Amino acid sequence: MTRGWRNRIAAAAAFVSLVGMAHAASAAQCGNTAAGFEEWKRDFAQEARANGVGASAISALMATNYATATIRADRGQKSFRLSLDQFMAKRGASTIVARGRSLKQSNAALFASLEQRYGVPPGPLIAIWGMETAFGTQRGNQHTLSAVATLAYDCRRSEFFTDQLYAALTLIDRGILSGNARGSMHGEIGQTQFMPKSILNYGNGGNLDNSADALEATANFLKAHGWRAGAGYQPGEPNFRAIQAWNAASVYQQAIALIGQQIDGGRRSAER
Image 1 (cartoon, rainbow, N blue to C red):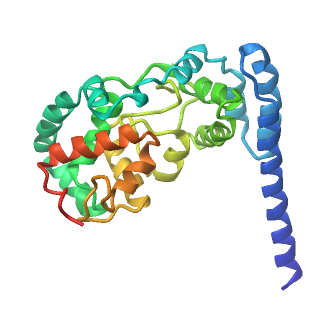
Image 2 (image 1 turned 90 degrees about the vertical axis):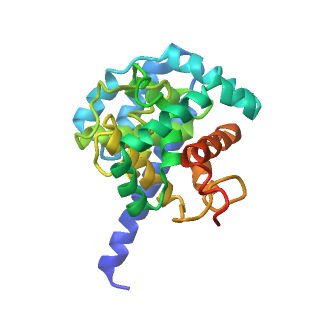
Image 3 (image 1 turned 120 degrees about the vertical axis):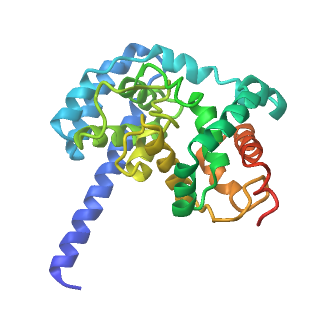
């Protein structure tokens, strides 16, 4: 091994170590009330600078506020404890199916193109779209960066949201995300509610407030998580694993599969 390669590997190891220390430091400084947020924010900004985050993103971070509404919503997620029938009723599954069938017909060319490129049929894409934002009508009005920063500071899931915060800051640095962007309570953005890290990995550079771009990004996400063209997507079938990657709640996963099947007319349920 040449000295140049050794130096580069050493530098890479040092960077990984630095990121690890930054994450550990952030976790150690977490809090459960607003009291320590401003101090945490200053410390996190210093760590972020050391990890290469640019001035515009740091400025946006320092302008964030503790998002009390986000914390309240995070503590009150009760719908995922419902039975499947209760969850479907609460989320208006029959309305999603009816509207979804209509949108499938009126956007037939788009969905055909997405299926050809990514192998994902219309049903699950439309189910996600309807479930997440009622087809774009309920995208949220929470200050995105404040929500993500608050959850990175909060002790409950600090590590997960620290990654999301770094992703959001990267998106701001790249000009993909505005520091004043608004979305849902946990930092989800756009028609199908992408988290910042998923925007980086699967967003294709599109505008996720645009339905076509958001649906393509969603198909890209599912394909990247193992979606196989022509295979079934109900529980126990190959593509259900990709739906599981979208959301961790079992009842949500089952609802997406069932609503998608009803929109697709059952054509996928028997395919493996």
